[in-house]
Image 1 (cartoon, rainbow, N blue to C red):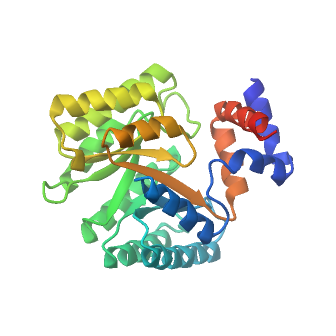
Image 2 (cartoon, rainbow, N blue to C red):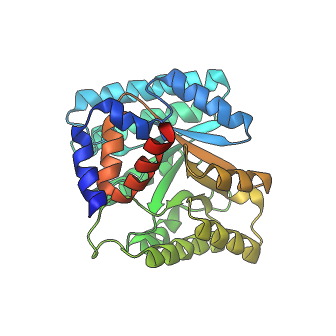
Image 3 (cartoon, rainbow, N blue to C red):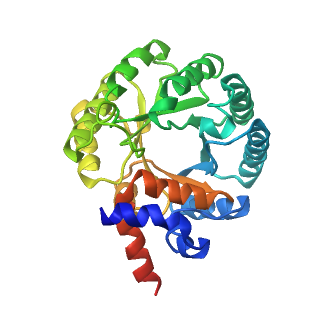
Length: 303
């Protein structure tokens, strides 16, 4: 209750105050900030996926600007020699305003990344977007089979069925590539599992399905129990190290991250940046008030 109260009032506070929390989890406001963060991660043996902040836009003019920013980002990233790919949120390109316009914008981004031999992942957003985003992925996968992936969220009750439905797109030569995460959006119990143990159980069930069917998973978690569960599945099925990777958010659980790298596992860090960091941070708080505990720690450490 206290966390929810703090999360609901934080957007009313000065941006400088919110930045005390956000600075640990966001690379910065500019593409230069993102490149610096990615270079530092690469030097530590970590791959990246870069995300420009901004979602749930209000008009299609914003969508065009966001597309152009991503196209420029790809050129800059490739010229800098960063070992990383790209993540996009479809609502940033007008998914809920004009789904066809959204598709066309993201198609341009995927085509540009493909021309560099790179890859774009479609982030999954709240439950109102899931069907639209899966349709978007299907269309892009048909044209760019090696250059596009999708995020799936273990806490959604539908996810295992969705994975099964998408297997018609899978081939051994060009396997499906999914980032599997727990899910952060606030959803009704009829849509999403609510208890920690339920979510973890379904995360590992989804991951096991991927391993058994040759899907390439990005195992996106900071939960040590899930990391251990994933490692046990990797051992059980004898999964080669080039057929999976672990993924984590920028600034989160550095010690766990380091242990995976030292053990020889591929690790990729999600690097968000952009001028819309304030909205991103406050939305994350509303969607997951438990993050407030991290804010309090950040404030104490910043003194």
